[in-house]
Image (cartoon, rainbow, N blue to C red):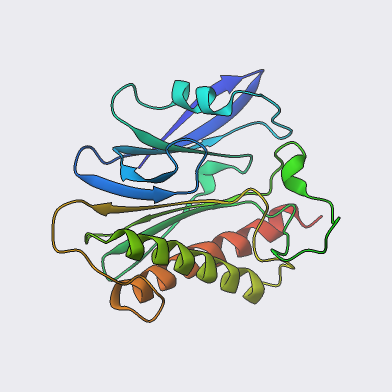
Length: 213
Protein backbone atom coordinates (compact mmCIF):
# COMPACT_ATOMS: atom_id res chain seq x y z
CA UNK A 1 0.00 0.00 0.00
CA UNK A 2 1.32 3.42 -0.98
CA UNK A 3 0.11 6.79 0.28
CA UNK A 4 0.46 9.83 -1.98
CA UNK A 5 -0.87 13.38 -2.02
CA UNK A 6 -2.14 15.82 -4.63
CA UNK A 7 -3.54 19.35 -4.68
CA UNK A 8 -7.05 20.04 -5.98
CA UNK A 9 -8.57 23.51 -5.75
CA UNK A 10 -6.09 24.42 -3.04
CA UNK A 11 -6.88 21.35 -0.92
CA UNK A 12 -4.31 18.67 -0.07
CA UNK A 13 -5.86 15.27 -0.69
CA UNK A 14 -4.47 11.81 -0.11
CA UNK A 15 -4.80 8.56 -2.05
CA UNK A 16 -4.03 4.96 -1.11
CA UNK A 17 -2.85 2.61 -3.84
CA UNK A 18 -2.48 -1.17 -3.63
CA UNK A 19 -0.51 -2.50 -6.61
CA UNK A 20 -1.15 -6.24 -6.87
CA UNK A 21 -0.03 -6.85 -10.44
CA UNK A 22 -1.22 -9.82 -12.52
CA UNK A 23 -2.77 -12.93 -10.99
CA UNK A 24 -5.54 -11.46 -8.84
CA UNK A 25 -9.32 -11.58 -8.94
CA UNK A 26 -11.44 -9.07 -7.11
CA UNK A 27 -15.04 -8.43 -6.19
CA UNK A 28 -16.03 -4.86 -5.50
CA UNK A 29 -18.95 -2.48 -5.18
CA UNK A 30 -16.76 0.44 -6.29
CA UNK A 31 -17.83 2.77 -9.08
CA UNK A 32 -14.65 1.98 -11.04
CA UNK A 33 -13.86 -1.70 -11.63
CA UNK A 34 -16.83 -2.99 -9.68
CA UNK A 35 -18.22 -6.50 -10.04
CA UNK A 36 -16.07 -9.64 -10.25
CA UNK A 37 -13.03 -9.82 -12.49
CA UNK A 38 -9.27 -9.83 -12.88
CA UNK A 39 -7.83 -6.61 -11.47
CA UNK A 40 -4.28 -5.41 -10.83
CA UNK A 41 -4.66 -2.49 -8.44
CA UNK A 42 -7.00 -0.80 -5.96
CA UNK A 43 -7.24 2.94 -5.40
CA UNK A 44 -8.93 4.63 -2.43
CA UNK A 45 -8.89 8.33 -3.29
CA UNK A 46 -9.78 11.16 -0.95
CA UNK A 47 -11.97 13.86 -2.48
CA UNK A 48 -13.15 17.21 -1.20
CA UNK A 49 -16.18 17.36 1.08
CA UNK A 50 -19.16 18.30 -1.07
CA UNK A 51 -17.71 16.52 -4.11
CA UNK A 52 -19.96 17.35 -7.06
CA UNK A 53 -18.10 16.28 -10.19
CA UNK A 54 -20.25 14.45 -12.72
CA UNK A 55 -17.38 12.30 -14.05
CA UNK A 56 -16.21 10.29 -11.02
CA UNK A 57 -15.13 7.27 -13.10
CA UNK A 58 -12.96 9.40 -15.39
CA UNK A 59 -11.61 11.20 -12.33
CA UNK A 60 -10.59 7.92 -10.67
CA UNK A 61 -9.02 6.64 -13.90
CA UNK A 62 -6.90 9.81 -14.04
CA UNK A 63 -5.69 9.19 -10.49
CA UNK A 64 -4.87 5.49 -10.88
CA UNK A 65 -1.95 3.70 -12.56
CA UNK A 66 -1.76 3.83 -16.33
CA UNK A 67 -1.55 0.05 -16.87
CA UNK A 68 -3.98 -2.77 -16.17
CA UNK A 69 -7.55 -2.81 -14.93
CA UNK A 70 -8.20 -1.71 -11.37
CA UNK A 71 -10.74 -0.81 -8.71
CA UNK A 72 -11.29 2.80 -7.69
CA UNK A 73 -13.30 4.18 -4.78
CA UNK A 74 -13.71 7.62 -3.22
CA UNK A 75 -14.07 9.04 0.26
CA UNK A 76 -14.06 12.45 1.88
CA UNK A 77 -12.44 10.93 4.98
CA UNK A 78 -8.71 11.32 5.53
CA UNK A 79 -7.09 8.28 3.94
CA UNK A 80 -3.86 8.80 5.88
CA UNK A 81 -5.79 7.47 8.89
CA UNK A 82 -6.34 4.10 7.22
CA UNK A 83 -6.48 1.28 9.77
CA UNK A 84 -4.97 -2.14 9.03
CA UNK A 85 -5.82 -5.35 10.85
CA UNK A 86 -4.79 -8.95 10.12
CA UNK A 87 -5.97 -12.40 11.12
CA UNK A 88 -4.55 -15.74 10.00
CA UNK A 89 -3.21 -14.51 6.66
CA UNK A 90 -6.11 -12.13 5.91
CA UNK A 91 -5.46 -8.39 5.78
CA UNK A 92 -8.17 -5.75 6.12
CA UNK A 93 -7.80 -2.03 5.52
CA UNK A 94 -10.49 0.50 6.45
CA UNK A 95 -10.86 4.23 6.02
CA UNK A 96 -13.65 5.26 8.36
CA UNK A 97 -15.82 8.36 8.05
CA UNK A 98 -19.04 8.49 10.06
CA UNK A 99 -20.50 11.96 9.72
CA UNK A 100 -23.77 10.51 8.42
CA UNK A 101 -24.31 6.93 9.64
CA UNK A 102 -27.49 5.40 8.23
CA UNK A 103 -29.69 2.38 8.86
CA UNK A 104 -30.02 0.12 5.83
CA UNK A 105 -33.79 -0.29 6.28
CA UNK A 106 -34.64 3.38 6.72
CA UNK A 107 -38.32 4.33 6.35
CA UNK A 108 -39.64 5.25 2.91
CA UNK A 109 -39.10 8.95 2.29
CA UNK A 110 -36.19 9.17 4.71
CA UNK A 111 -33.58 11.68 3.54
CA UNK A 112 -30.91 9.79 1.59
CA UNK A 113 -27.40 11.18 2.17
CA UNK A 114 -26.23 9.40 -0.98
CA UNK A 115 -28.17 11.93 -3.06
CA UNK A 116 -26.31 14.79 -1.42
CA UNK A 117 -22.68 15.71 -2.14
CA UNK A 118 -20.13 13.33 -0.63
CA UNK A 119 -19.39 14.26 2.96
CA UNK A 120 -17.02 12.88 5.56
CA UNK A 121 -19.18 9.81 5.93
CA UNK A 122 -17.84 6.87 3.95
CA UNK A 123 -16.37 3.58 5.13
CA UNK A 124 -14.20 2.02 2.44
CA UNK A 125 -12.83 -1.47 3.11
CA UNK A 126 -10.18 -3.44 1.23
CA UNK A 127 -9.65 -7.11 2.14
CA UNK A 128 -6.77 -9.24 0.85
CA UNK A 129 -6.98 -13.02 1.01
CA UNK A 130 -4.11 -15.46 0.38
CA UNK A 131 -6.38 -18.13 -1.14
CA UNK A 132 -8.41 -18.40 -4.35
CA UNK A 133 -12.19 -18.31 -4.06
CA UNK A 134 -15.17 -19.27 -6.20
CA UNK A 135 -17.52 -16.52 -7.36
CA UNK A 136 -20.07 -17.60 -4.77
CA UNK A 137 -17.44 -17.50 -2.01
CA UNK A 138 -16.43 -14.00 -3.05
CA UNK A 139 -20.05 -12.84 -2.81
CA UNK A 140 -20.34 -14.57 0.55
CA UNK A 141 -17.18 -12.80 1.71
CA UNK A 142 -18.65 -9.39 0.85
CA UNK A 143 -21.64 -10.30 3.04
CA UNK A 144 -19.25 -11.23 5.85
CA UNK A 145 -17.35 -7.96 5.48
CA UNK A 146 -20.61 -6.01 5.74
CA UNK A 147 -21.79 -7.94 8.79
CA UNK A 148 -18.46 -7.43 10.57
CA UNK A 149 -18.48 -3.72 9.74
CA UNK A 150 -22.00 -3.34 11.13
CA UNK A 151 -21.07 -5.24 14.30
CA UNK A 152 -18.17 -2.84 14.86
CA UNK A 153 -20.42 0.20 14.43
CA UNK A 154 -23.06 -1.11 16.81
CA UNK A 155 -20.41 -1.93 19.42
CA UNK A 156 -18.94 1.58 19.19
CA UNK A 157 -22.34 3.23 19.59
CA UNK A 158 -23.01 4.58 16.10
CA UNK A 159 -26.67 4.58 15.10
CA UNK A 160 -26.43 2.90 11.73
CA UNK A 161 -25.41 -0.14 9.74
CA UNK A 162 -22.93 1.91 7.71
CA UNK A 163 -23.17 4.96 5.48
CA UNK A 164 -25.00 5.41 2.20
CA UNK A 165 -21.77 5.56 0.18
CA UNK A 166 -19.68 2.72 1.67
CA UNK A 167 -17.59 0.63 -0.73
CA UNK A 168 -15.81 -2.70 -0.41
CA UNK A 169 -13.20 -4.62 -2.37
CA UNK A 170 -12.05 -8.20 -1.73
CA UNK A 171 -8.91 -9.43 -3.51
CA UNK A 172 -7.94 -13.09 -3.90
CA UNK A 173 -5.29 -14.82 -6.02
CA UNK A 174 -6.34 -16.50 -9.25
CA UNK A 175 -4.09 -19.54 -8.78
CA UNK A 176 -4.75 -22.34 -6.35
CA UNK A 177 -7.62 -24.52 -5.21
CA UNK A 178 -10.71 -22.37 -4.80
CA UNK A 179 -12.37 -22.03 -1.42
CA UNK A 180 -16.12 -22.60 -1.66
CA UNK A 181 -17.27 -20.66 1.39
CA UNK A 182 -16.79 -17.13 2.74
CA UNK A 183 -19.39 -16.95 5.50
CA UNK A 184 -18.44 -15.89 9.03
CA UNK A 185 -18.27 -19.47 10.34
CA UNK A 186 -16.11 -20.76 7.47
CA UNK A 187 -12.34 -20.96 7.94
CA UNK A 188 -11.47 -17.95 5.80
CA UNK A 189 -14.69 -16.03 6.33
CA UNK A 190 -14.12 -16.10 10.09
CA UNK A 191 -10.67 -14.61 9.59
CA UNK A 192 -12.09 -11.95 7.29
CA UNK A 193 -14.76 -11.10 9.85
CA UNK A 194 -12.28 -10.69 12.69
CA UNK A 195 -9.87 -8.58 10.63
CA UNK A 196 -12.59 -6.30 9.26
CA UNK A 197 -14.24 -5.95 12.66
CA UNK A 198 -10.94 -4.96 14.26
CA UNK A 199 -10.08 -2.42 11.54
CA UNK A 200 -13.50 -0.76 11.45
CA UNK A 201 -13.86 -0.71 15.21
CA UNK A 202 -10.49 0.96 15.67
CA UNK A 203 -11.31 3.42 12.90
CA UNK A 204 -14.69 4.25 14.44
CA UNK A 205 -13.21 4.67 17.90
CA UNK A 206 -10.56 7.03 16.52
CA UNK A 207 -13.08 8.96 14.42
CA UNK A 208 -15.40 9.94 17.27
CA UNK A 209 -12.97 12.09 19.33
CA UNK A 210 -11.95 14.05 16.23
CA UNK A 211 -15.48 14.84 15.05
CA UNK A 212 -17.82 14.66 18.03
CA UNK A 213 -17.68 18.38 18.80
